[in-house]
Length: 254
Ligand SMILES: Nc1ncnc2c1ncn2[C@@H]1O[C@H](COP(=O)(O)OP(=O)(O)O)[C@@H](O)[C@H]1O
Ligand SMILES: [Mg+2]
Image (cartoon, rainbow, N blue to C red; front, side, top):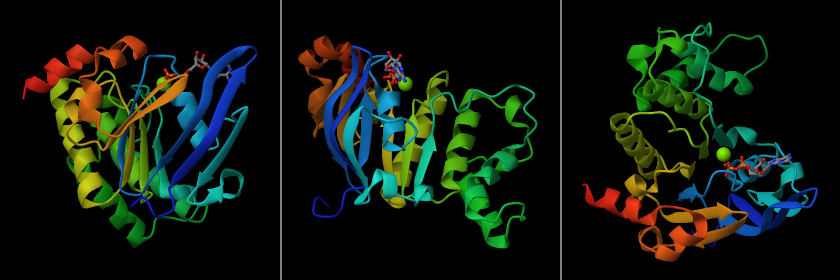
């Protein structure tokens, strides 16, 4: 794997606002097929970093390549599915069904104002099937539970047939049972469909068995190639404010 062109290749990324250093000298690569979890304290810069990878925010300095191309020249954005933080917080009266929302994932793929082709419809159906929301397709999005909405948002991202899925804390406010189901769906996407996953989360304990590498972002990046070691490391807890012992206990529950 390491000999292929990385999906993301980030070198010396820095972001300053006034005299505040928000991200400092961050370098990493993400390869096809990986499952990377990103953890770190609130305000540590995780969302900012991910937005920079997608060209949505500009770093003060950095060299970012996507599939070997400079970010400014990269055009194949549909290869990348992004579920932003709070994506599933929608107004209770938002006038769209689950199917409407998932169909939005096809919009960038077709001509403006044209209707969905048979193939588009099939892809939308597949995405709903994968995320287990077919039964909900005619329901209004605002009437769903947090866990159901979370799955709909991922289905929408999957409808664009991404090679990589970037999820920014999609699990806040979702109950434990839904979480576990969600994590096993993610793991399946990674293992069976070879979708690369970058998952920003607070709940690393539960997915420690699935993930390959763990990035901790707190102004700087610490990259662990073995998540299980990292989780039981006291220094990690002291340095980054992550309650490693809690995560550790969590793991012993099952
Ligand atoms: N454009 C900006 N101007 C000023 N401050 C910013 C800007 N972008 C991000 N920040 C600051 O960077 C810090 C990191 O935020 P964020 O990336 O949301 O952290 P996380 O996602 O890890 O909780 C916060 O203190 C935020 O206020
Ligand atoms: Mg964030």
